[in-house]
Image (cartoon, rainbow, N blue to C red; front, side, top):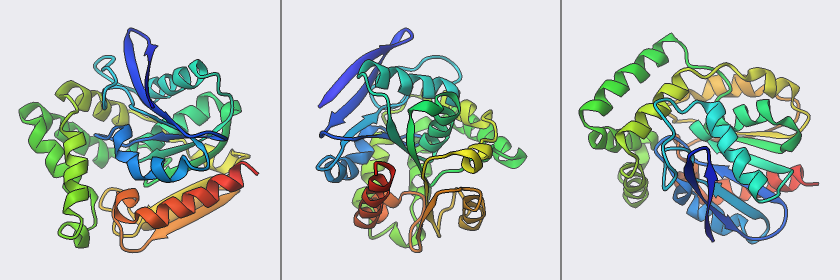
Length: 265
């Protein structure tokens, strides 16, 4: 069921499906709750699944010139408080993982578990910050050309022919993101802090899903980062890029369900 709630001076859209223990799905940059369709369909037979359109994405309003990860985390908290929900597992894809980490930092008492789905606890390095600044210039010139190319690059090279439908699906969702919303997210990601301390300190289980062929986040760097986690669960997708839930849907759904069962034990 699609629902809306108010946050600051705008509207947030989210889906609320299934019954039981609660898992929150946070999409990545240029996504929306729709990108999780297969995951929602699978998990909602066992759990209550909340999938939120983050600020400036999907049908959720844009809230200014910069969407910090903290602002997005507070938006998520507002949705969950409005539903009267206290404890849940956060699953964040890419940028959604940065938001989930900001949430874990701000609201640790609400955490039952955390899944970083092709995401990192480290801040952007200097080169990555320069790349984001360059991206903002490209977005100002033509945001639709930008979104199309970015999405294509998220899939492993060997999937660009075999997963054309999935790529088109993700591109269609990305194309709905406004120019200002794209810039606000890029600025927010560029300025986020390191949150690796959470990986080492968290008392709850943390899962990292890693694509061996990820063009955005190097697999070896993420595997090294995973060693910080006390209660770690690692899924390494040998043939996938940055979009495992679309590249290896069945495997990721099954492993995610196993992880959620551990979190709610």
